[in-house]
Length: 385
Image (tube, rainbow, N blue to C red; front, side, top):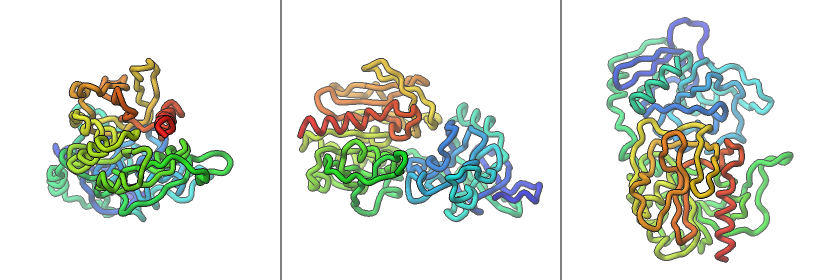
């Protein structure tokens, strides 16, 4: 936990414009640089920290109580936390959940992730909304000695996420099989035992619950690294292709991923489904553009309208880039839009079972508003079998 025996600040968040926030450090000691974003979710801080899509980012939580239910292995979305650090209003308290296996601060310390508490997160969030996602340096030093000039210089020296390919840093090292399904009472996570549809999932930074959702929808999932070629994908004789979420600039990842997707589309008629970065990669493969957003969408309360049915889904989002809907080519239609800002949240080809969404249906914020997307993918495979 943070050092409550001292009154002096033990952590500092420095923005590239020179703005400073002082607070109490927790988790690991040290220094990191990243892009700063904010997340409006009221729960799920562990899932957020272990979501590979947050690589290269420090997350400000707008909900004040973070750490109050501790951490446990079941809630990890990847093997280790990926977010560079977190900013919270209150110092994390002792965990109060029977599911807790560890204290948040201790968990972060063991895994090299820095936290800062006691921050006016409302002020910080307003600054992000008004100025865009800033580059920051975050330091936790128990002695309270900070080199402010060096911190600000480090923040200004952060290269930013534009043009940055982070998928290669978070993808799996080798191919593996996945058969674990979504959690269900009373047995928890159970393996899929019946034969299913052969699906290849490209791991640009895949969350575990996405893979579980595919398995629960009737898929036998083979996970391939982000750099897999079309030849390697098709060698598995897949009945469907899934493009996962992930961090960084889709244009940078797309340098190798887009040609691969285009080749698969040209050589095969199998259904294709993408989420988050996978959505952006698919859009670029079909000829659309992606652009950097001012502050992105990060939270579990984002309303999205399905323009084909008129229904509104409450969704979970985590993205700093978006598909330019004005650039969608003929034969590709917009299927979902954000009711916050009208930005694109889904596309599909009009003549093939190829579609994607910007949000995270596996995160269950609705709680099940968007799970139909996995069933649609499974149904499309079944129809072509």
